[in-house]
Image 1: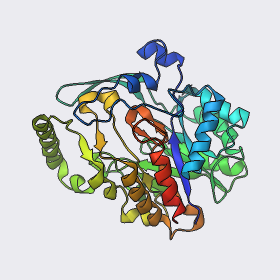
Image 2: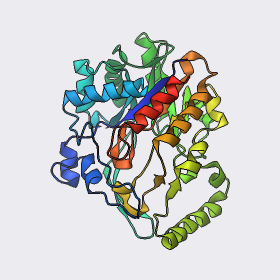
Image 3: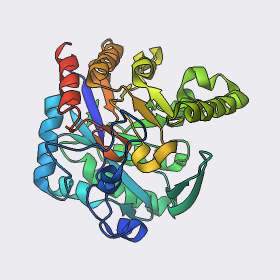
Amino acid sequence: MTPQIIAFYLPQYHPFKENDEWWGKGFTEWTNVGKAKPLFKGHNQPRVPTELGYYDLRLPIIREQQAIMARDAGVTAFCYWHYWFGNGKRLIADIFDEVLESGKPDFPFCLGWANHSWYSKNWNSDGTTTQKILIEQTYPGIEDEKMHFEFLLRAFNDLRYVKVDGKPLFYIFDPVNVPDEYINNFRKWTKEAGFPDLYLVANITHPSVKKDVLLARGFDAVTYQRLGSSTNTVIAKMGRMGRGLFKVWQSVKGFIMHRPPRMVDYRTFYPMLITEEDKEDNVIPALLPQWDHTPRSGWNGSLLVNSTPEYFYLHAKQALDAIKDKPQELQILFLKSWNEWGEGNYMEPDLQYGRGYIEALRKAVDEL
C-alpha cells in the first residue's frame, strides 16, 4: 500500500498589491504569526518557524526545500490553493504560475479552487463578527468558464499533476455555490482535451450538505472538514436551539476558566476526525495535525490544545487504516495543511516541536 497524501498549500508568504492596499505595505501571513500573543498560561504562541525561517515564497530555493520536507514526511503532492474570482481575476497567483512555468519543484501537485469571497472581519466581544467584503466570488457564465478552464488545462497537462485513474483531481472548497454549468462544462472540456474525465472533489463543512446530492451533481468524491463544532456529529444532532445553548455554555465556561471559549482538547477530539464514512470509496479522509486560529481572531478564535506529534501519529494511523481496503487508486488522504501558519495549521518545523509532525507522519506511513 502506497497511499497518496495530498497536503493543502497556501501560496501567500510574500507581499502583493491587494494585501498592501487592504492591510498595509508589506503585509503577509507572517505579520499575524509574528505578533501573536499567548492568551493563557501554556498557550503555544507565537509560533516560530525554524528550518525555513520567516520565508518569502518568491524564492525558488524555499519551494524546493518545502518539497524535500514533504517527501520526508510521506506527503506525495501539494494541493495549491487557487483563487479565481471570475472574469480572469486571480489573487496570490504568481507563486503557482512560477511553479507551473519553471517545472520546479519536481513534486506532484493539484489545484484546490478556494471559491469564496474575501472579507475583512472585526471580532466583537460577544463572539460575533462584523464583515466587510474585500473581493467577491462571482460566476459570470460561459466566457468566464472558458477562460478558467484554459488556465486549468495548462495545469492538467503538466506531468506533475495528480491524476486518479488518468483523471485530473480538482478540489472545490465551496461546492454548494458552484453553478452546475461550471461543473458540467469543466468535465466536458476535460474529456475533449483527451483525459478520461475530471475527478472532482467536494469539500463538506456543514452537516446540512449531503454527499449524495453532490455526487448526483457530478462530483466524484467528498472530503469532510470536521474541524468546527458544526460538523461534530454530537453537536449537529442538538438542533438549532441546542447548538445555540452550547455556544452560550462555551462562552460562560471560557469566562470562568479564563480560556478562549472555542478551545478544544485534541486528545479527545482527534478520534472524531475519522469516521466509518471515511472508509467509503467516494470519501477522502482528512488529516489535521494542529489548529490555532487566535493569531488572526484573538480570543474568539478556535484552537486545539494538546495537539502534539504523538497524538497526530495516532490520528494518522487511524486515517491510514480507513483507506487500506480501498482500491489502490482511491487510497488518498488530504492533509490540512502544509503551511497555514496563521491558523496554527502546519507541518513545517517550528521552535516547539522541530520536525515532530514530519517524523510522526513518516512513522505512520512506514508502519503500513
